Length: 215
View 1 (tube, rainbow, N blue to C red):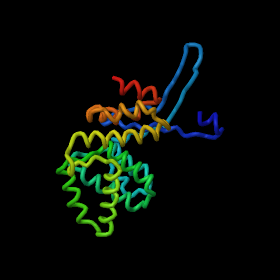
View 2: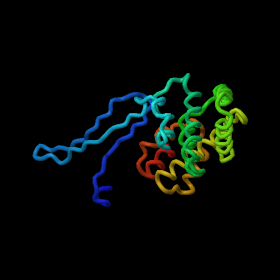
View 3: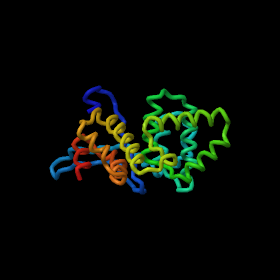
View 4: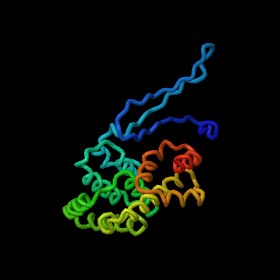
């Protein structure tokens, strides 16, 4: 469709976000006994096969957001969040992009109370000016609906924060969300919201979203 519209060469790239490692194909063929209809090649990017440490010096906002879907160990979660915040400080993005990236990251990597405390300790070890900016970023996000985590510790607040993040991502992907569907997402339990977060890249149409939340 991109070629049909712009009549220019297009490099197809499939980005895979599965939590487990797979060996995805880079080719799709459609063949009949009497003719070959399609032989489609594409580049593949399996995020969990990439080390997040290799991308923390990047100035690409997309790389920052995708850190939370790359390969990391449980013990690295706090350091990963810290480096994500440092990337945002360095890139000096506008508030809208900052909110979008933070929303995406927080959807897939949510620190528990102990990890949040460790994050605060680590932030105290970095440059004072940089640490101040990190605090401003996290505080701003919390004020815009991020779950309060350690401060509130309420499941209801957690669900509401996750639902708000998912709605922003869904609207970004599909352009709109019917009010009725928005209300249903906002009322979903935390477990269902997490399932939706994992499935968001596999949902291709707004009807797919509707079918998923109707299960």
